[in-house]
Length: 355
Image (cartoon, rainbow, N blue to C red; front, side, top):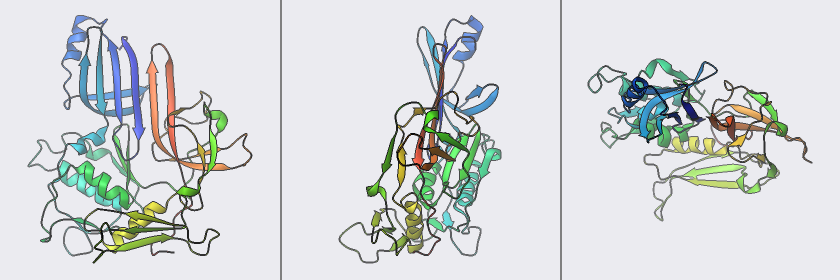
């Protein structure tokens, strides 16, 4: 890898991250021949930083020019975008093999059933994903089903779509760290921060914003999507008797088979970060951390809480954030730069059951 000229990788929540390396073709012929044998979805790209594994996943593209060769990959969650679900999705309180539970357990079960199916992959778990699943279960029991009227139909969609479209709104948060697939929950103001930064640790400008339009005291969730509201359901979460009065927010979903309980969970998830009216530091996405920032790459896991102190502002506040993205780029000309994107946290939502 003496001919390595550029490395770029990232971490993100509820999406697939990417990595890529560029190699100059000033190589010995045998080395060039080995690189030419790289095959998408057969080989993997692994990125080390100071001898520590920081990113890994299947190669998805190889782009070769006269002077360089670029290897592009996606993290381990990319496999779930290429595996079609072949099992009934019925996680309800009923007798049988399926049952309600934490949404992280439901996601884990769906992944394991599909990835380990011996009838469709030889060997099962060909991508070596299952030993590297890490869970942080939420205390809330979730019910989830997606089937036909006969309770036996199978939803033929990629597993990643099930996670993203159906389970994330129910409280799942997924990301990858190295090879590990982390099935967790969104961090709240009750969780301990991984690090405490000041504005001096972030290069570039920042603005302190009290964002009224994003605030809400009560969030309503409904499946009323048309003029015919017969049989529609709703759920709500929030607080009454506040200084804001009726500061409502309405979330309308077109998802099918949403029960009142499902809508309650959607309202709960949508309440995060809305009460009180959020005070946020507007830090441009991808802002660079300074070299002296008191945080390590190990702590920069997408989804964790980071606190930022608003030094130099009239409002002396410390804002809790959820780390949504980490962007790391290295070149043989400019060295390494680490960028972050942050999402403000709010107070924890009330327990299930409404105001």
